Image 1 (cartoon, helix red, strand yellow):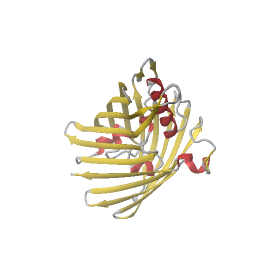
Image 2 (image 1 turned 135 degrees about the vertical axis):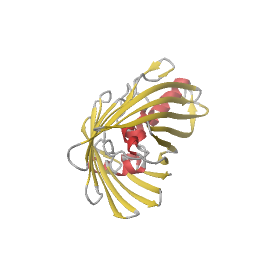
Image 3 (image 1 turned 180 degrees about the horizontal axis):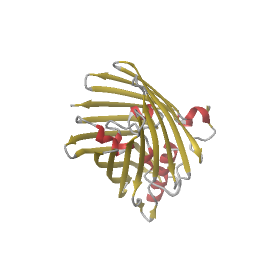
Image 4 (image 1 turned 60 degrees about the vertical axis):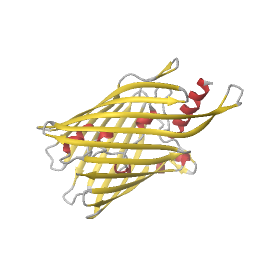
Length: 306
């Protein structure tokens, strides 16, 4: 019965994150964090300059000149929720950060080998991240250490991973280049089945115009999934307290978006939009993104600097 439970939860994760490779685990590490980056189409590797940098490029934490606290809540599908809590603290020696990512699922009905009801069970994935970032002469550098845990019913697995990233200030005013490697480390092992973490190589460009508008481009390669993703995003300060965002994510190689799902074509599935509202040192961000046959996903983030 344990293997049946494991299989059921893996099916759920495959639905949540399209085209997950069969030989990787920790799929929740692919889910985007923060309404702001998602509203920009996941193009954030070179833009990262707030608490969301914990999940996209730890080097961005070095840009903070105040303490920052951020939370996110996302309702994915079928009573699946993704939550994030992050805190960053600048010091004279660099910026220290900590984040918690939690993917939870409502109780699932378990069934035995003959499909008889065998009670209900819970499942969740957890990542606790410790971060350090420091500015250098040509930009910023950062590193994450992630402690990971997954539980499916009475079966659990633990692991760890490392992220490293950098943001380079180019000779063109307002233009930054970013690089990040995510999820370096051994994979989980459930029962007798082991698999690798979803390794991601990310690169990006971010350009801020004289009027404060941001244009961003990201390219991400997942070698174990055999796919490459490209993201375009923009952020525009329409008013002093209101920011508009839009972006698009597409696959250059590999089947990340599929063809037609639930009436949504491949061309529309990667679309995302968002809004940001700022009051004093606090902000509220919202993002809307399409998820094929699963419908749409809404994310809400709250942040405060102090």
